[in-house]
Image (cartoon, rainbow, N blue to C red; front, side, top):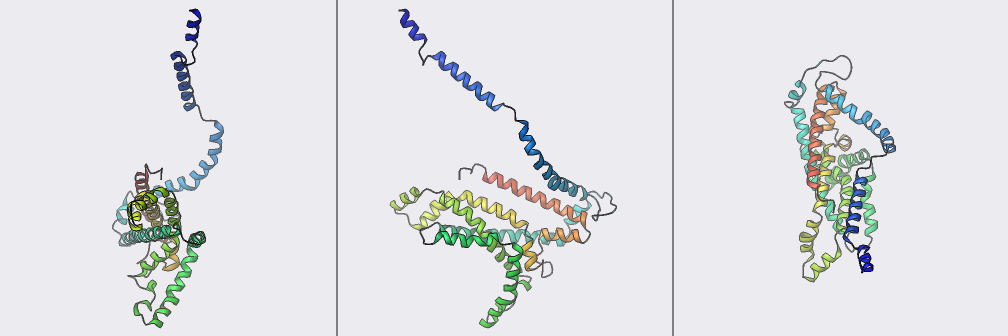
Length: 318
């Protein structure tokens, strides 16, 4: 009798033992989550934090401060409130630069994503030499933007007009860069040529993440290649499309070097971006005025970043 009682009290699966182990495990979990951060981590973080503050945060705060003054960048200055902000919203040159920048960014995003997605579909299919072709298509991404711009400037100004004149095509016999209505087309072409490889890599990663079993099941059910593309591929890589669109749009808003190399903002101010307008103002003594412009542009970039976070939230599994 006593032996049985002793055996019952020492069973490994007794409720008392389980409760003790659970409580102990929870205690360890709580201790693990509330463990303090080692000071050495802050020591490693400090140099980067100091450099970021001195190189990014402090200049940004100073710029926002001077946007409420009449400073020309040097010498004496005085506060003028929101005068610069009111003036810039009525400045046709600034409004034109925003209109061009947003229009150019939207057009380039569409061109880049359509071409990059189609190339990604082709380069992930069962074709020969696809590894070598991927390498070739990525090359434009590693070339400096200003070099690309000067090369295409020569092509648009000399080679293409000569070919158009020889072929008897009037609209092609003159440079696109000299046409105020079509210069933006040349900028979109060149910018897209350099930006497609980056979007291409993201799309390739997205397409390779789709299981082959899905396509095999669709083929067994009689789905055509077009149906597989529209009903399987595109929905499953929708997260990558959103990422490419948002990142591309933010990047194209800051367009500068390619535009400088192609048109330098011309003809006239037809292709002057916001970044070019801000830098031109700094060089001409409109420091505080263009700092107000830069502050508004910064707010726009932050809003787009918040939009990106809201659209990509929950897509980490892709």
